[in-house]
Image (cartoon, rainbow, N blue to C red):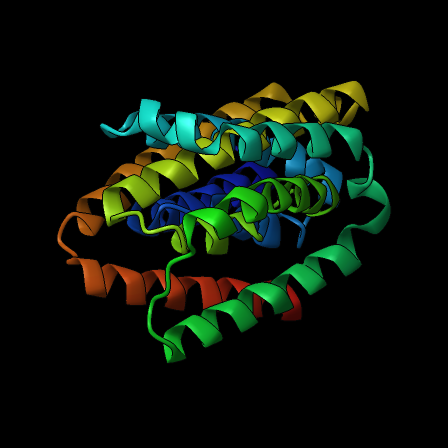
Length: 241
């Protein structure tokens, strides 16, 4: 087993475990670790299949799928369209975009840790949802990471923990699928061997299962705090990597 393959498996194991606990983190952690030893396009090509599979499992792992799709479909459609529309941007502007993304994630987490949880009104949600979807698609195309601003938006629409985690899974699934299509259209998926993608996927799934077991032990308030601390750590890491 080559050192590159071991590094890939370790990176996806760390990212998968974080995703199991808080419902997100696989793309930013995986991208942040993988780009230390490969180009952003190669890192995205390795990350996108494990991200898609783990997100689909997360999206299907709850009782709110139909209701969430009915509520957020305009947001999801615009996320996919914007990701595909800006395909190819990752290879040109990734370093600067990932740094900006890290700063935004860290600021959001700090703000949320200091302030009470708030909920958007239905009127605010109707216009902020499509805007969030469009911006999320653009951010995904430029960075390979789909957590901004989709996560703050979903966190502010009044979902309980299980529905929130499932909604993130749905949103991230759409982003990962659109990113895979974009990478395929621009030749990015051919940048890495199949064995690397298979090993990364296996590591991510195994570690995600372990993190999921730990998440079930957390109550709602503890989950929110752990989630925001994890988001803060991700933001700082991406900004300073």
